[in-house]
Length: 142
Image (cartoon, rainbow, N blue to C red):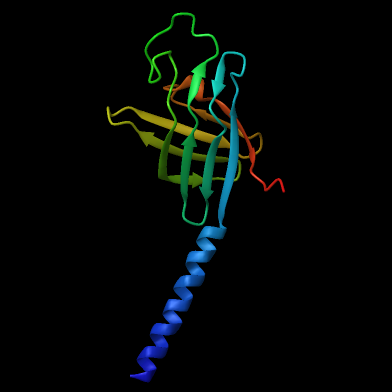
């Protein structure tokens, strides 16, 4: 019985260490729109990369036209989009790019790529051309 409890205790300790390691492997990117002249973001979009688990989570900011000039429609009633989160999604972590995809409820698939060298993040299927972003590594500022 004592031997069994020791094995369980070791397994639990290993599990806790493994979970902490998975959390430590998460990298956050801070991303801003490339269309700053025409669009305004509620806040930056953030991307959580977990290379150890092979997953990506994207927290898209709401975006709106700076000057809608009578434009209606869109999710905000003025041609813009509300904030949303997609993921965790399976991702392929290459040496120069990270690729993943998201399937909308209507069946359309958005293919996404993050260039690890330039920080460019875009929809290569051009479903959401206004979601072209530039990202940088998120770091504590103080």
